[in-house]
Image (tube, rainbow over all chains, first blue to last red; front, side, top):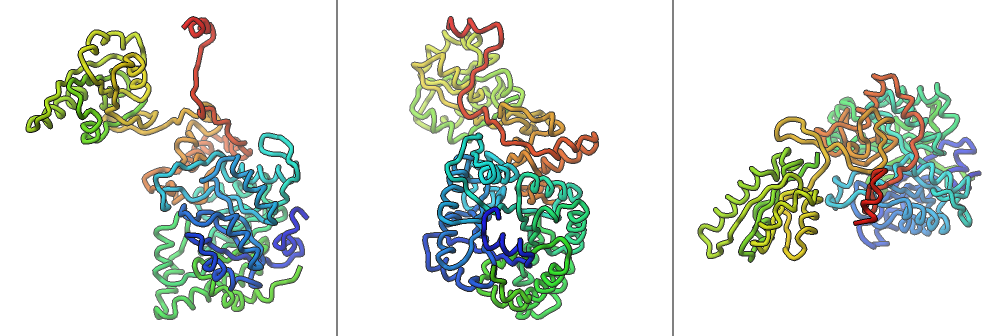
Length: 307
Length: 224
């Protein structure tokens, strides 16, 4: 065991993992955080706690991760390269680990231009690949980035993101390989709608032997409405929403669109369960945490295994 | 070259408000090439400033001078006599030139008339694009001559990130993805091996004031 986290144990035992997501509040409202955390309890193995997602200021991800723990959830602590230099990153990693955080997802982060402080200076001292390797070296070598020894190294289960669709598509699989080489233990992908491309990407990962070295969790975000699908297609960077997704939502009554979105997500999950090389699903029910129990139930993900 | 753009007119007016005699100082090198702060632009700015005072009680005397390079004391010395007659200097040089002008004439307030924007190239007349952030640790050999620090909005060394929109950067469809271009050019050259290897964190050498002394010139600094 690298970290002993529940997520690691689930994956090591060969269970099909199921992770969720929780965006910290835009303020110090702990009640709001608890309310969002409540429906996730017992439904997922670990919950990603986002780090100033879409470059909008929120409660820090490590602090919200601690609250998630008191609510009985296992956090997957997200960290982006946009807001911290290597000193702050390592300091936060030590603090997070000391407080019991065991999973961490290493990301570049959305550009600050998209957020609520577009005038801010983006840090980007190191990139996500370098962050992965830094966390791995902290864990396995007990060393800071500068090579100096750490007094009690943080033992974290290291996650990374992958976008199977973004151009250059041909290069994506090599970038995945690079992240594994840098030290990623598990991968959570971008929200998947284009299943053809996903199948192709996973096939390549299998062919290159990558899925034997890393756990891939397929990203699923149920569409709440036709409007959301259109927005995702047009506005969200790196998103690939094929027309057949739009058409299917268009084909049902407006009141039934959310239900249809959940149905589509469940169909995806069913396929991922059977897909060689996919070790689990990462459910990003954005501002829809209260629907997670229903989705988990309908997708046949319950009960979660005890490890 | 160093590219700069003129500050908004009202900001310039506000900076020099209250000074009776202002000398606008141009620079004949980078900022002249990018049509921002050369002799011609000094004339235009002064004309605008005079025009704006026509109907007001304030009557400032505006003088003009353009030196070949404000980042060189030798050229600044040429205006020593002229400067004595003024109570403020308005520089149209880049940030380096403005500071050297202020260093040359420490008793006189110096104000910037331009914002220094980037080190860039001349794409066409009046069209400039950034190409270098002067990070002090050039990786262009690895990246097929395309700078990931400058051209990637996140300065990634192991790109591309997941935000690429087809061949564009996530910040703007008109901004090409640097890492897409790096990939394409390296593929063209058969050198993709360059970026399969992990690129370690950068040594940011531009995080403190820097000095360069070429070999053989050390005594110049010690005798200064």
